[in-house]
Image (tube, rainbow, N blue to C red; front, side, top):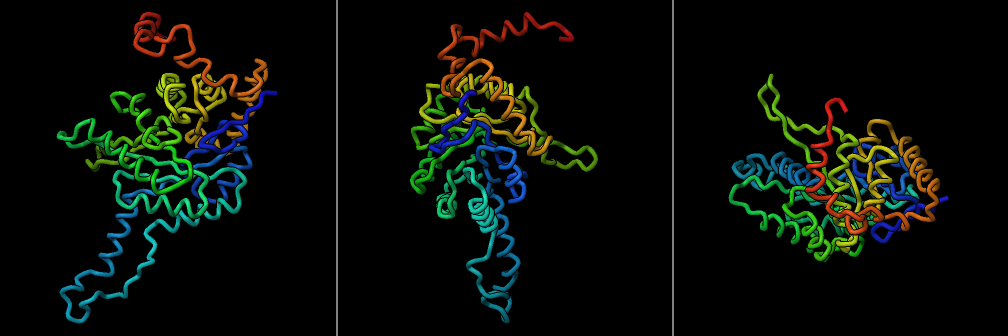
Length: 334
């Protein structure tokens, strides 16, 4: 039987399938269900910068109101509450309970865009016992005057600051929109990232034709979405000094196997577990074990990266050359 043991962010995992951040990792009961189904590790839902800022501002408005203009309450209508929970404590409490109940690594997650207080939140997660931290950076370059290099520098600065603040392993979850993803991956590793999660699926806005309002929309992934991740994992493998976690489109055993062969350290599942429930993870893990065992692999290390760009006889298969081949061999209805 193939040894599926994997090292990710310095953590020893029984196999390479991790339950990534989703509603399923947002409660202790579902976290326990994921562990029972065999999750090698879990990533808690992100603590969002906007959530903290919105809650804090709403609270200030609710207790401040027009107090400054009211002679009966020049100092405010309510006493100061320096410990008021703006969303942070809820996440910290989930982390504490998960660490107390689970036997698998628990990875905390931060989602933000600015340097601000993220070092403080990262430190708080470390103090509560997080085994690692996933920094989920979501920057939209909506201003035409903002250049690509400026966005990249913001990423790097944020990673450097969080890396300085904590000692636990740090993964950075990125999207594919960089003009040179492999170069950016290398620079993020140099800035202090121990791992890279490739790729994030950002929500895309839609327009409600009845209300004419812009609405958030996030569809669950499909297995075909894995192809983009597969290509860049294969290109980055052995060229970036960081663990590579593959996410988006990981639905079945075949997806996991392909990504490991391409060079992924671990694979992360979200949409498939939301569709089929935590028990689906066990079926995927068993299928991965069978595939490698039937082909007499001793361990995943033997297989990992064996079909990366650096390892295959035709490296340009992961680049533009395959584009023409795909077009010329396609037949309608296939």
